[in-house]
Image 1 (spheres, one colour):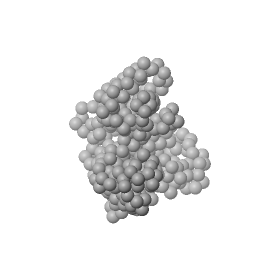
Image 2 (cartoon, one colour; image 1 turned 120 degrees about the vertical axis):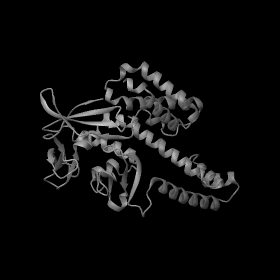
Image 3 (cartoon, rainbow, N blue to C red; image 1 turned 90 degrees about the vertical axis):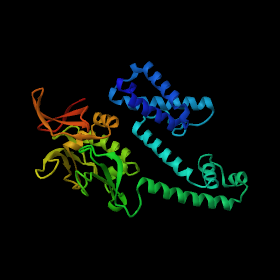
Amino acid sequence: MQELWRAPMRRRLVRLCAAISGDPAAAEDLAQETLLEAWRNAHKLRDPSGAERWLAAIARNVCLRSARRRGRGPLLLRDEAAGDEVDLDAELERAELLELLDRALALLPRATRDALVQRYVDDASHGEIAARLGVSEDAVSMRLARGKTVLRRMLAAELGHEADVEWRETRVWCGQCGRRKLAMRDRRAHAAVTFSCPDCSPGVPGSDFPLGNPHFAELVGGLVRPSAILARTGDWLQRYFGGGAGASDACTRCGRAVTVDRYRRAESRNPDGLYVACDGCGEQVSSSVEGLALAHAEVRRFRREHPRTRLLPRRDLDFGGVPSFAVRVEDVVGRSGVDVVFAGETLRVLAVAG
């Protein structure tokens, strides 16, 4: 719970309030009000692992109240959605997209920008826009069509979705080596969401989520930004393989009951991991031990504060009488880190310690 009051979380909270309220000048005050309300209601937080979502929900309510007082609507929520469970990473993802859209809009001619804002922000009709701008409705339609085309090209270029680029560099550092940023493959060329490190596995998928699988299509098919995709898939990996070898789950494609098994590939850089193979439809999914360590929520929180991390060689140990090993994720300067302890036989996560 104390993590919520530290500087990195406060900075993220200010960004979130700025994105929700649409008022960067008021974001500091809104974040302060959010933290004060969280402190007053700390006794209501039943599950500490959900503290970030809980804090984001409070921020949304604070911003909503502020918007009502000022007689304007917040950008990222409607009244009826204010009570929904909030994913902080998703909200910050929207903030990044809003910033990107603002930059793209600023590059458009003023007349085109005004038409787009009045149509899609103010929800004005073509006739109303024509009257305000002193032009014909045909001219408004032309400006909107041209503006959307230019915006689409600008956003596509910024997001790295040019058709002639199969792999593009993301802003996310490889968590395994900490030397290079991850590359993401264009999903149109591969029908999958795929990440790879140019140093650790050049041109070879380090993680691959086929969009032909309905589960993965629903999980990440609608996401664009790499940070949001990695957050969503990290949550899924932790849930799906959290029980370790021998645990039961459901096939991601057909829903049939399946059992999680352990694999070992001696020739691989990451030789140990867990997999599921469905006897019904033949679908297979897997994750290395290293992938499971990086997917853990505590590790992802650590990496938000220390974006450049690396994995150290595993250390064998005895954990409460269970033969185990630890995978350490540390920042590249070696000043701090997180240890993820796995059971040696089942690869189930036994503990995470900073």
